[in-house]
Amino acid sequence: MTAVWNSRDVPGPERASAVREAVGSQVVRVDIDLPDDPRDIDVGLNLSHAGPVQVLTVRSMATTVTRSPRLAGDATEPQLFVTVQGRSASAMSQHGRYARLERGQFAVYTTTSPYTLMFDHGLDAHFFRIPLTELALPEAALHEVASRALGPGNPVAGLAASYLGQLADNPDLRSPAVATALAQPTIDLVRAALLSSMADPALGKEAMQTTLELRILEYLRSHLGDHTLNAARVAAAHHISVRHLYNILGKAGIGLGDWLRTQRLEACRRELAQPHARHRTIASIAHQWGFADATHFSRAFRAAYGMTPRDWRDHRTRPTPPLT
Image (cartoon, rainbow, N blue to C red; front, side):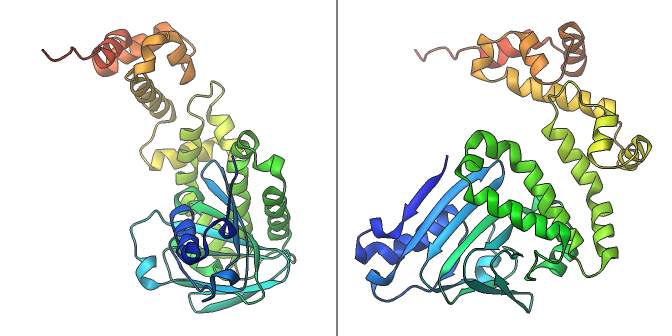
């Protein structure tokens, strides 16, 4: 679902505070320079989500947006923003670097450090907000690539700029069902574009190796219920051999089969504790989380938790007796 917000729908005396609150509560807390005359305040927001990725299109009068050191130190979840420039041009600065963006270019910045965005000719851009945990890139890599004009001139970054622009512009691609399916490919493409744009190729290679374990575990968690999830599929998704996959997991003290069984059992245990679980069969819940054999699941559940799945469900979902 796409949410549309326009400052023109707000009474003049409340317009400035409404703009700041709309951006602060829905996107990120920043300081925004706005005209003194409310009649000159013209801001339109078009906001949607693709899984963990927020997609925001903004049109506004000329303005400057600043995230101060105080705001950068707040306790909100760290995010990466990708700005894809529309018509006209804009500029930004972070980490002492200044980048000017022309149409079709993009740049990134993080919410954990101060930054300034300058839209001297009006704001016409798409913004993608991605949790830093989803990108799984080390701080040094993000610092190196932030506030640089990216896009044409680098094949991967050029592809990312074109793709992100189409994703934001096409209403069909922003529909919930389609957008959710595109969330992980979007994150993967942004990560690849950033790594391919680093001035030091060794840093990009190091970043990919450093975060490989994190990315593998995130992939396993997001596909936990898939019955076709196996070592070959995980290795292929990360462009490594099965042997290398087992080496990486082994260094982390993880046995793939045991890890999957434990995580799936825990997911089933949480599901069985939900009130709606009383209206589902044990087999359907087991199947939802990757167990093909309900009998095997029941035995594994009892061995892990000391009671059958049915006993656990009955214990957790038993109605509370009324007070007398």
